[in-house]
Image (cartoon, rainbow, N blue to C red; front, top):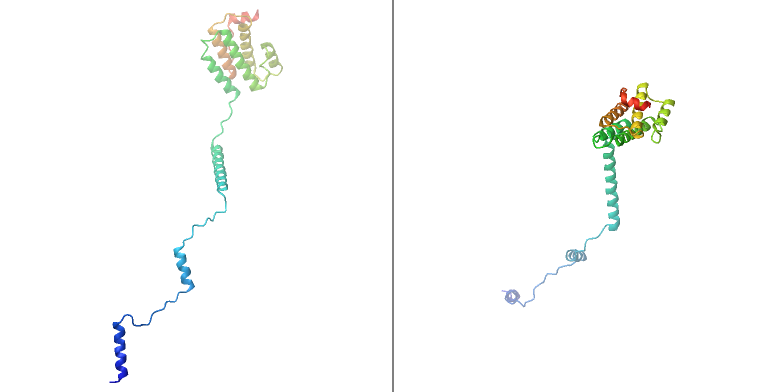
Length: 209
């Protein structure tokens, strides 16, 4: 055998048995891209605030939006709600007469006549535009005679009613609860456009004196 070949074989065997024998080593190539990728995994950046509006401005915008929404809802609800028409003077007068009629036993005829007279005069003033509130019965009837919006029966009923009130208030007529009921009935019929009430003989006599 060739001496060179034997030496080569022994050298390889010696290399395998001796760890300190020089062997070829692998070299890894580290590029800048790999380094940058490793840094991104190890150093995580904090979240970025992309909001350009301050918190107080956001609060104001939300508040204004909710206010406008509430206003729109309120307007829609108000529009859908049916409008209650105002009460007519006739309805008001009838309610007031009904209310005072419940206290007819608790009031003297004098006080009752004043209350009923005030209700009736207020009704005529509001219904027909007549200056009845601050007038006496004579002045009131005079105004009706000049420009009366009533029929002959209604005017007669009104004259009779006011005459009864004057007798009770100024002549101190000894009236009773029956007279109060009669006044109330005449006032209700007048407001409703009713018929003339027949004057009682005694009341007619006292009024003519």
